[in-house]
Image 1 (cartoon, rainbow over the protein chains, first blue to last red):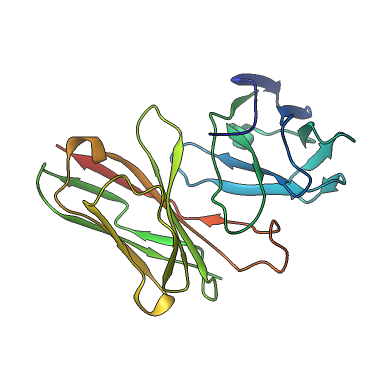
Image 2 (cartoon, each protein chain N blue to C red; image 1 turned 135 degrees about the vertical axis):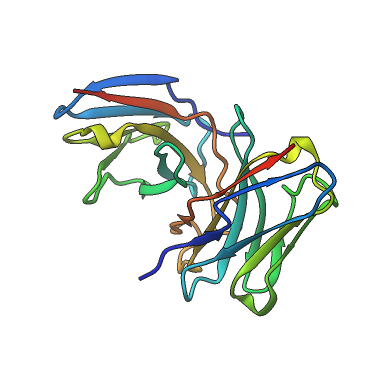
Length: 110
Length: 117
């Protein structure tokens, strides 16, 4: 079972920042927080991951709270192509599979 | 660099027939995963190869499913005989073995849409 809780859906205006929350209150010290997304009919796409520190790459930023019990994925300037289901996943090691939950369906509106 | 390639993109078969799905991972990736999404359900893990060895096959639904990765390159997933409930999208993913246990990025293929009639 997924160890994360995410809102079912969110809307965001095009050009604005999309902030997607995730709760992972039972995360253990060695577990990473991963974000993937699935755009309609495509395979899941890696976005970003982190352990303790905030992370930023060309796609997004990941803000992890100090107690690590929650995190927020930030898409700084959402476009229509960012409409997708976003999955927040906690995972310990490469020997354990990614467990996908229901994710958050983000709709970017023009 | 080519991504993860899956073939066929779509397959329509009748109940009781056999289907073989193929996955070509990114060159150099030792980890290969199979996942499945049944309509209306979440994406579910099926199994994990490290090179040619099955690391974890706890997600395989039953013995009608057989996965192979001879030579540690491409992988096949055979369903024999196919049942109606096997319909769904089958995804393959690959990754490099990370230096740190949790620092692993999976790259997914576009999936094979299987319809069993």
